[in-house]
Length: 28
Image 1 (cartoon, rainbow, N blue to C red):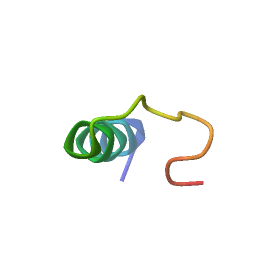
Image 2 (image 1 turned 135 degrees about the horizontal axis):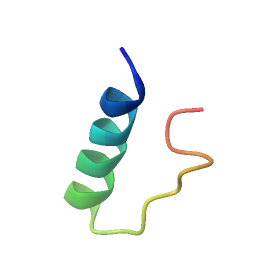
Image 3 (image 1 turned 120 degrees about the vertical axis):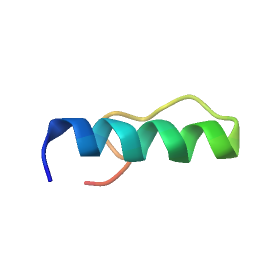
């Protein structure tokens, strides 16, 4: 699991929810 996986997960999450990505608080 690297940076790409993190970005992909965050992107998928925000996209399905229709909200702006929270880079500081998505997974952390």
